[in-house]
Amino acid sequence: MTNDTIFGRILSGEIPCQEVYSDELCLAFKDVAPQAPVHLLVIPRKPIKSLNDAMADDVGLLGHLLLVAKDVANQSGLKNWRTIINTGEEAGQTVFHLHVHVIGGRPLAWPPG
Ligand code: AMP
Image (cartoon, rainbow, N blue to C red; front, side, top):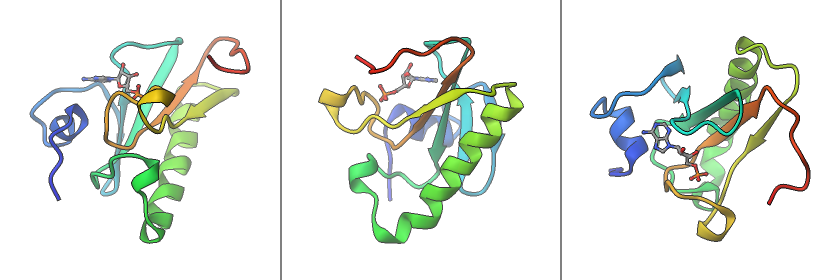
């Protein structure tokens, strides 16, 4: 599988990132345009375009991404945080490589815009 998105280029090492966690399945790094004091992204190494493109075989990978999101949130000192997966352009997805946002460090309003 190929992936020519900006996240694919981060995974290949072509573009640098501020890494906070890495393993054989995923990478977590700081968002370049943080929306809160803590704003991290957890991405699978597998180039799944969006949650809508995930398959039954990806169940373990998807669970892993959430557990890593919890770990990096805790390691960042967060006790309250929000995980967000934007799916599709109208939902705000701009990078078509599945990613979990971890946002916290300030009060977060609900509902989101
Ligand atoms: P989304 O809008 O849900 O697709 O989220 C994409 C996120 O990727 C945005 O929050 C961007 O700020 C972030 N982003 C884009 N390019 C980079 C980059 N090179 N390094 C880190 N974060 C990035």
